[in-house]
Amino acid sequence: MFKMIKSSMVLSIALGMTLVFAACGTAEKPATSPSASTPAQSTSAPSQKPAETVELTISAAASMTDALKDIQKAYETKNPTIKLNFNFGASGALQQQIEQGAPADLFLSAATKNMKALVDKQLIDTAQQKKLLTNELVAVISTDAKAPIGNAADLSKAEVKNVAIGIPESVPAGSYAKEALTNTKLWDSLQSKMVQGKDVRQVLQYVETGNADVGFVYKTDALTSQKVKVAFAVDPKTYTPVEYPIGIVKATKHSKEAEGFYTYLQSKEALDVFVKYGFSILN
Image (cartoon, rainbow, N blue to C red; front, side, top):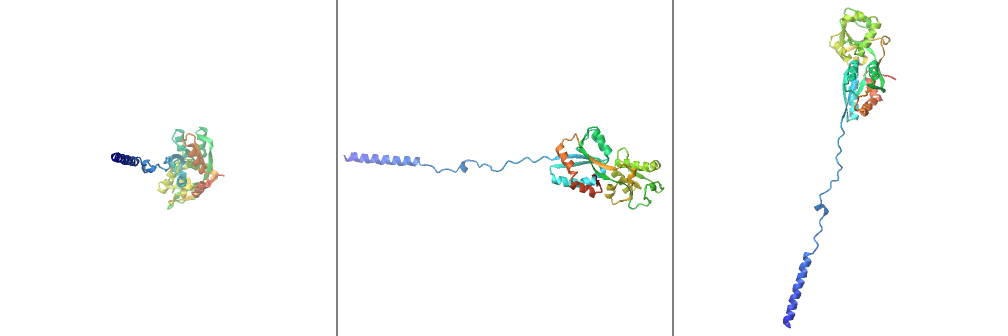
């Protein structure tokens, strides 16, 4: 009987140890942090694609060079996605370029006839063009000029060897000068002295360098140079008023941006710059 009790005790102990080991094997493992097994999710917003820069080509009369370069700085600062590219030249030459399909978004002319020609050919919408500024025609001489020139009649003096004007067929300033000299009966007699420039800035350069004794330019051009002075203002009754229209070219591929700059040119901020450079505002 003692053996039977002893055997029962051994079985009980063995069974107890088995249950203990089983409990140890099924004990819960420490919970793991989700962050330890799952990659961290990015909370930053997706990067935005930078805005593309739009380039506008503006064909503008050479006499507007300084004012427009000043305006360009202010406009591009306020509109960092817009880049203004200027094509300066004689209004007649710029008109022909647009007619021949040269890329241009806006046209700024020194004469209404050049704008009208493009409107008539339906290259510029009449509703998207406007007369903006006026200018004056003057005769300039070098600051150290010896020849006494105080009026148009003095151009006939022997001391005056060369008279510079823009090519009348393509340069509005030259056309105005020819008109004024014709109305004062001087055009024919001065033909042997005439030196023609491709635009009004070249005429100014002729006088600055001594290649011409006198040149016909706009008042605004005269104000840009310290090498010339105004000899006389041309009688405004002798030539057609100098008016500057601006317009949007129909072929523009950036109509929204072109309209934005077109509107800005009519703002007080832009007009103040034009006035600073000697232009007058058309009411």
